[in-house]
Image 1 (cartoon, rainbow, N blue to C red):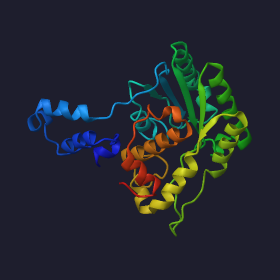
Image 2 (cartoon, rainbow, N blue to C red; image 1 turned 45 degrees about the vertical axis):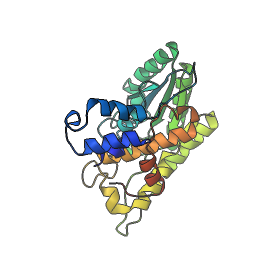
Image 3 (spheres, rainbow, N blue to C red; image 1 turned 90 degrees about the horizontal axis):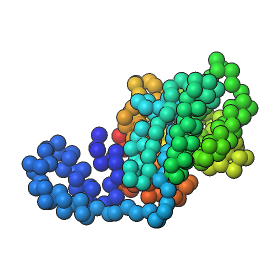
Image 4 (cartoon, rainbow, N blue to C red; image 1 turned 120 degrees about the vertical axis):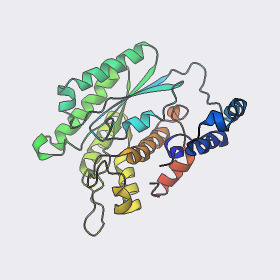
Length: 277
């Protein structure tokens, strides 16, 4: 796995450093300190307008967002620390009901409220659906929609900007290698809620579905958390879909562009539907 895929590569200076690190050689031994400093000076300087508040991202969701099994941590790694912060509060196995009932939503709202009080610009995203759709959850599309709408209202009430994220597509193929759209109705319901509330949303479901269908079953399996798990993500899957979420965010909210680091190579490959692992 190339480390260059994990981070931004939007300058020759950064690309050179990644190449050197890929050799797995101690940099001080093979590149003098003054040379490292010179390379660093070549890197582009990111700037944001004076007086722009620091963006703070708060991620809510199920296991496809949560640390260790989702895209959340890899998205957070893209946030430039000097311009923003990111907290992944995804919890495995949760629904729009249990995430609130377990106290996770209240904790996230406290963080959003605190960030707003410090003059930051907090953004709270939420992606659910994988567990809400299960029969044992007993959550209808109507209740799911109501719960998402309440999330939007709650975030606004504490001074944050709500962002609805449609469900990450499952990577389930038929024996004929046709990708099955399992979460489509839930994703469309989430988008409808966002539109009705005048809130922003990231169309992760349709975008990830198109990408998985393009790379095919064999390549999609290489992103599975464990073999045969077509929902959760391993490290490579987190890198791919964390990047995809970052690109969706930059497209949806231009003010996030300086805050989310770029990787032109990886973004272009994903947009073109190419398997990168």
